[in-house]
Length: 341
Image (cartoon, rainbow, N blue to C red):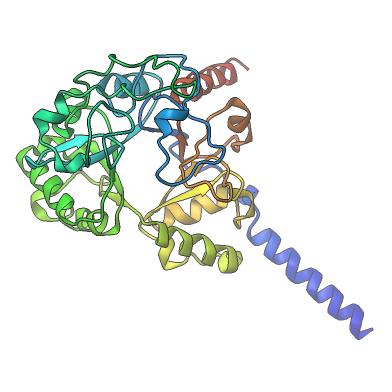
């Protein structure tokens, strides 16, 4: 009899925990699904054996378009395909201006040499950012010559897309990059609303959050700079997996942005709706990534129609994608079909 009581008691506790964390208890978070385009429309690459520092321009998929990442045409195409936010990468030049390019050095993608941030803007502006792309091991370079002079400055990006939203990736851990960004926005307060978020090195990321909350950078309600760190992300997910069954949201998950891999989401208490409501209540947005894979140093996204089908139908957050030109139109067509039905 005592064993039966113990069994029934345990069963009751499990039932209470299940019901307390049942996603169907709440509806979708208002706001709907939004798309975050990583690097704009760009040349994707295979991830097998990918290591940190690999020249990804030398392993691209056979091109289906001529867009080059982090260029103005690629960003325009991303917004046209349905992106809410476009992610871009910045490096300060010797002149104190942000150049928009992913790589720490120029040797991989361009016809230039050396560390990106050690060059003058004039030198960078003369480079071909499509020079190094090859899909066949160097036998041909289909984009060579198409990127001459296409490396933009951050000023040029903001001027070109006055209604856009951008996620800035600081490629270093130098706090001075935050100072440069704050100085730029002091000179152009009309651009403040364009900066949706920042990530990368902790020093510039969190310094930027401090500076852009100051009185001279006051932005409309709800547009505080969203920042996060890899360490904070791991703390948030780990603590929530351990204790989130109680409804408690760890401090690391609050007033932040959390990136959740597609294959990790179902393990989170209350996934998706209740989880999203809990985080929304503490001022946190959720970005859904592609599946986590052991040993992959890159940022995978929702990059195929098969992966898109795995996204919960009422997920209300941001989808990170490297294939906005595929995912954006597919979502639009799906929404159109839903309205017809």
